[in-house]
Length: 240
Ligand code: ZN
Image (cartoon, rainbow, N blue to C red; front, side, top):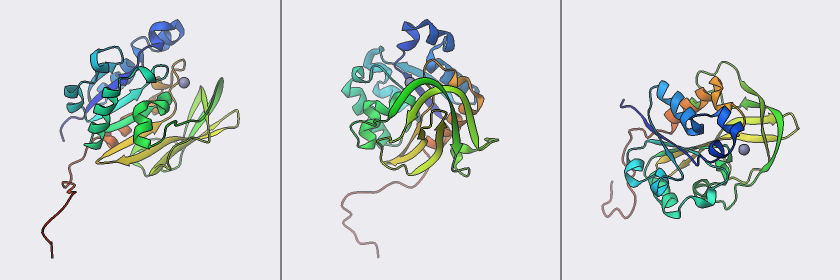
């Protein structure tokens, strides 16, 4: 199997504006994620908001099997043309892993068919436990426990305004009492989309080795697989 090509996209603003965030992610969130994916054997590159075409030119996307997406305060600054290019590549087979506050990104909303992706949230340093509810799923492969404990995370709470996931891999509990669908799988066109909820910029969540394992698994799961062509449209000949 050829090496899976991953592009990690990050708006890359918090890290430049906040010393607190820069201490947690000195290479940027994208640098951290691309680093452990590279160590796991993926062919990785990064892209950020302020680059021309938001770093996601057609060529970059054509050379990407799986795109990771971290955005928060600048969803509106992502060019509509960029969203359109990403959307078309997803329809054509590129996998997409949407992280944390990416629930409110233009591309996630478009792919989910929702205008909001709304949810409850608060920054209260609560403890989070992600319970794995589908231990046979490829995204859970190799996990040694049926839960991931994060001592401090931003709290997200239901109701999460998304379509019902095709597969749900994680449900979270927060010490403040909320629950949240934290690992959601979707099929869109020829491609797969995974939403993974933890990853607030002030917490070292992406340094957690179990979280890294989940994201490594997600990249493998979302990567295009060899399969038959998906023939659509008018087919003039009868087949039997
Ligand atoms: Zn956050």
